Image (cartoon, rainbow, N blue to C red; front, side, top):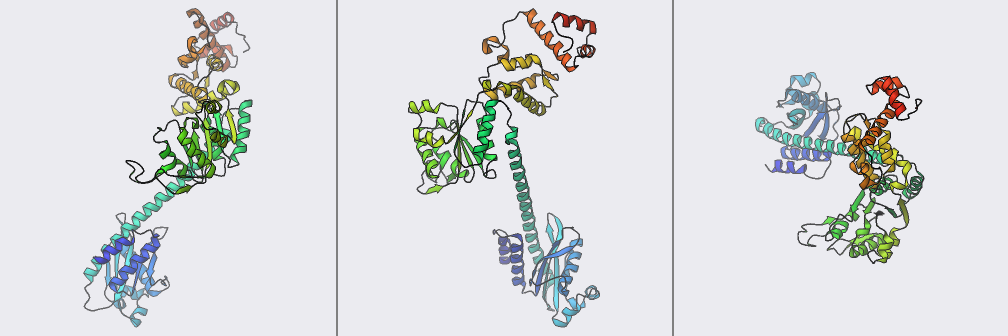
Length: 498
């Protein structure tokens, strides 16, 4: 029992599989006072056994006894039943194979091999050879060896599962990192307007360095996307990217979330916990909405920025970190400084390189590029086959003032995709905020007849564009006749060569 307990403890230590198997075999060898022992597992092809671990370690298939172990181990593995040979020198099958003669001339031994079960299957064998004794009882020894083999087999199973899971997680981690780098590559940020080209140029310059950056802009302009692009195009791309919204954290938890805490720092602190600063060590920390930090927390953030060290809440030891800081805010920090809500020294520490993201209304040429990008994204996500946006909807998108910026545009397009049951998004698919004069100021008040006429004209233009100006084909698309088509075109003064 003591040997079995020690055998199970071998596999609970942080050793490699091969080391643990060697230690397990050594325990069994000492328990029996054996001449030699070997643990055999299938090779990569799964057909033939190979000696995984042996004692003495000098065993090779060239040795007579090693060949004997493999021959008997293969028999055990295929049948699933133990093999007991009291006297190796007198076993006919071993004599024929040339595995017994040498042993008979030197010292007589007994051989025991038992199945090694892994995942409810016999995939290997555990063999041991003992000095021959005429009064030895082999059945208890075989049973004990079978229990030891079961413990070893279970340990091999779990270690294989752990190794398989480790490889899977490593592959998944590598795959996700590649996906993130591709997702946040500069080429995936939509927009070619002049203001955005200036942003790209500055982001490309900042990404190559470890300098602190301050991203400014209205809510919904894509500040977090730019922070991701800086990190995943920097030398820290393989390290953590930790983001924290300073506005979302309760005032009482800001300090513990940012810097962590020690056991007993406050009621309920059952153990120590790393903060976001510490989790980002080696990588990048994004402090989003930094303008909403409390004055008390601003002091500690300033020290962490300057010294790259801090103390956990309730701790006395300084924790040093190697972190690249990126801050983002939609607040006017200069006004906040004047009002006494934001520390001036923290502002200058953050404002090493400032990147300003223009609001959507100042980058009108990008609106349709962004709309097409979101249309493709949400059509795929919702399983729709929407190909394009009609002229009427384009006019509404271009004339709207977009107070919510890119985030609002994304929501508008998703709304339209969900509502639309055809292949084209029209004006009536857009949310009411873009269609109501009172809320958007984009459309004049029209009578019913004028609204119907406007919608009919849009349908005609759409069909003609799809048919590349072919009136007969456009008439078929609208399920009408060419004569009616000509009449409507004259009525709305639509040129025939559109």
